[in-house]
Length: 267
Image 1 (cartoon, rainbow, N blue to C red):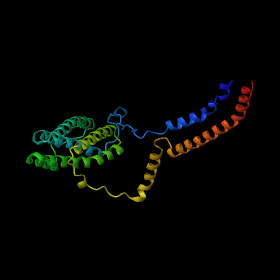
Image 2: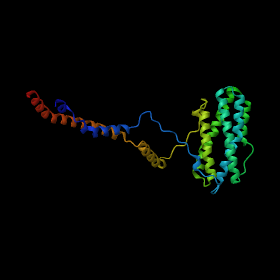
Image 3: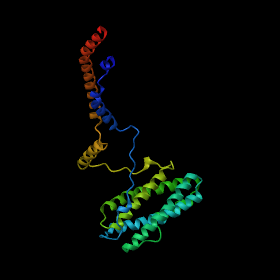
Image 4: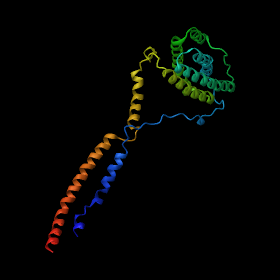
């Protein structure tokens, strides 16, 4: 009888406890990181369909030109550099440009775009600089020239990717974008990129950028799907309510418990 009288009615608090646990589980962990998405190429068609603009043709030619000088530049990096890291970067970029060049020639053939077979004047000048340099001087020239070139082509790729009407050009732009981002990362991993000397981005127009900024801020605030302040407030409220309910239950329980204990000792 005493054991029955002392049993606490925890089942009445299960609902509040479960709500608190659920809210805690919805709070993202501090060390959680979202995976960086890789655009799936199999969702893009490549049938040569759609109008090909002058900008599209120029883009395909520029991708071809990039390979015509970056492949021999990477080969020189493997021969002339005294740094194992620069040698690795040169090999990786040259090999990847061989693959990108194949994709470019396939696209040009499909779209009947005539491609050059040698680098342009500027690119020939950069290659000449590399031939004249050795050791650390070569490393500086190689990284500087390639980093500058990739910095210029990167925004051009984005323009074509978002504006072209042709599916083959669209797919090539997406592929080239992946190569260029990889090459930027490889070049910057050398540790000798002079970021302070890079061209400064033009100042945004306040009137034109205010609306997109507000949209991005709203999206970022709601991206996790959890309103953390609201969760904290709910947890605090649940704790106060639970404490109050427990106190009331214990207070209401005492008279019955005392009367049963009196009868127990009296008997």
